[in-house]
Amino acid sequence: MKVLVLNCGSSSIKYQLRDMEKDEVIAKGTVAKIGEPGSYIEHETGGKKTRREAVIPNHSEGLSLVMKAMLDEEHGVIKDLREIAAVGHRVVHGGAAFTEPALITPEVQEKIRECIPLAPLHNPANLAGITEAKKQLPEVPHVAVFDTAFHQTMPEKAYMYAVPREFYIQYGVRKYGFHGTSCRYVSKKAEEMLGSSSDRLKMIICHLGNGVTLNAVQGGKSVDTSMGLTPLEGLIMGTRCGDIDPGVIFYLHRRANLSVEELDKILNKKSGLLGVSGVSNDMREVIKGAEAGNSRCKLALEMYAYRVKKYIGAYAAAMGGLDVLVFTAGIGENSPLMRGMICENLEFLGVKLDGEANVKTVKAEGVISSPDSKVKVLVVPTDEEKMIALDTMEIAEKVKKI
Ligand code: ADP
Image (cartoon, rainbow, N blue to C red; front, side):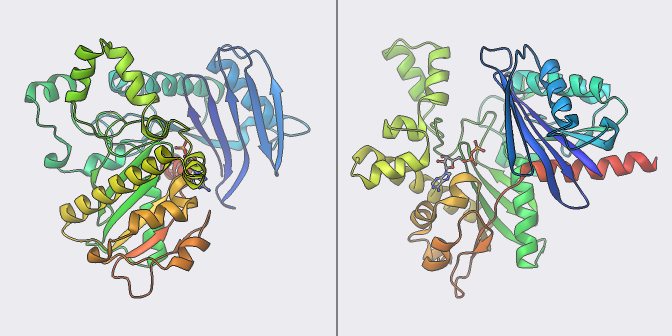
């Protein structure tokens, strides 16, 4: 079975065509700068990349180009669009309505629309992708896989904010969490690696990419997560500040005369590693800066590791212990330095790294704790597209049987 995975942003479409039996990515690519000058499609298959500039005014045109690229005589991978058996769509916000992936029906589309106020930038783009893909591939099942769904198992005490209850009832103000597809994939993979899926297994996943999520997973279920109503809460990220005193917002509004829009931009786009280091939002650049003696870069690394460490402590306390600590995403998979800084002095919790294994495990799965470490520390490369494709296949097969 061939499954197409689509991740539609406001000005981009990322896609992968996967062969499920062979567990292979047949083709992948990006349509970028939709509706902007300089739009293009980049298509990759068999290790060969092609790039074509084109006028791409909207998602409809973008998706047509994706289909053309896949059918192309020279770089294509299929002869007929009917070879695509199902389409999986990444959807950012499913609110409290979706606890698992869903076959896309008009009712499901309506519920995704109702979540737009919670994700005003992402959900409209996801919906545009769904509408267009359904037009261009009308015969096959389309499945929505939500970034928020995995965290719907959190208990009320973890997801409620201590604000007047009417804001929850009227506007849905609560913690939802994101990166759920990545965390679900990684937690399953970690269980496989350990050969254990006990319903008592206590795991903390550190998804350290441009965006950062720490996720407490107990018995395979998310019980707490660091992002909130929006992705701004939690850890220090590339350009997001993570947890701050909400009073800072009122203070800067009054003192520096900054508007809500300006503060939104500052805390989401100009803070985090970029704001602290003054150099970059890219961890590699910040590490380089620190190694060259830049004190702001050094501080950025220290703050980053310190905050992750604090969350690990908090989640271990919340679960009453810790069995497995998992690192994933760009920084988690590739930076022995950051993993080492985070795990330093966590022996009291039973975390003991194997220095050599830590340095060696880059872009690969592996155990990086020492044999006598009470807590197993793992590196697990994430693969959200694969998870979306597996969910899509599962639902598509159920639909076929009906
Ligand atoms: P996204 O959230 O956009 O998917 P990624 O998971 O690709 O992001 O993570 C991007 C981050 O990973 C960037 O901060 C980048 O600097 C960092 N990263 C990638 N490779 C390395 C490396 N070798 N060492 C340190 N950080 C790295």
